[in-house]
Length: 228
Image 1 (cartoon, rainbow, N blue to C red):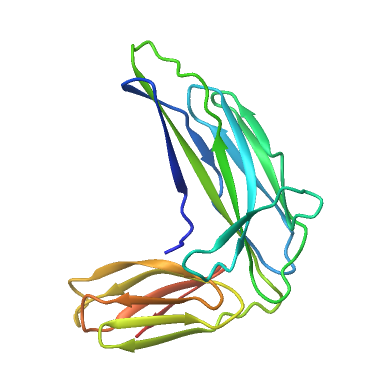
Image 2 (tube, one colour):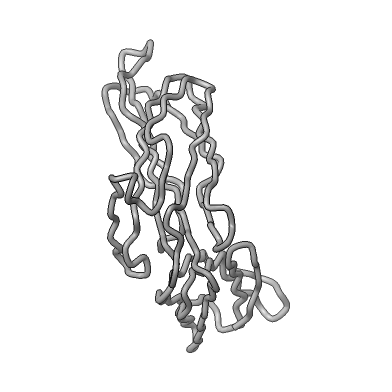
């Protein structure tokens, strides 16, 4: 499942025993650019910790996001990159926040363009009064979606017994927020995690019960519930 995750990697620099945290907070973790909308958005990055953060920012284009193991290609040249992030390095003192501007330079034409923007804190010396300490740094991964004109998902759902199969035959992604299955009297409900289905992606779910299942789905800001 490739639902946009907030935390993507955890770095342990073990020089001691007691933890010292360096905290980074983003105002947004998913940016969704519709065709015809403004092609730039600002994201606030804040340091809520007690140490100065040095953050490097990288832009990765996701190749064939519908595959189980999509490729990530780093966009190193800002002149030719389809997505521009500025600045690409940040220094944040404790309690300080700064704005990061994200600009779409190449709009989508036929199907979604998918990017990931990674925020990686740089490692510094551990400062602690304890004889031993552990510095925990967390890298954040932001999902950026650029939708094409006339974006139309064609979500096809097929059920066979307790197996539910999804196929996105359209040109834009669909977010399955969750699945909910209850008894006939709406009791003993079970919720299953969802998934983001990119164009051409297939996804299969094993249901815990035989009854009908409610599928909560979103396309941009449009939300709906369908039953199968």
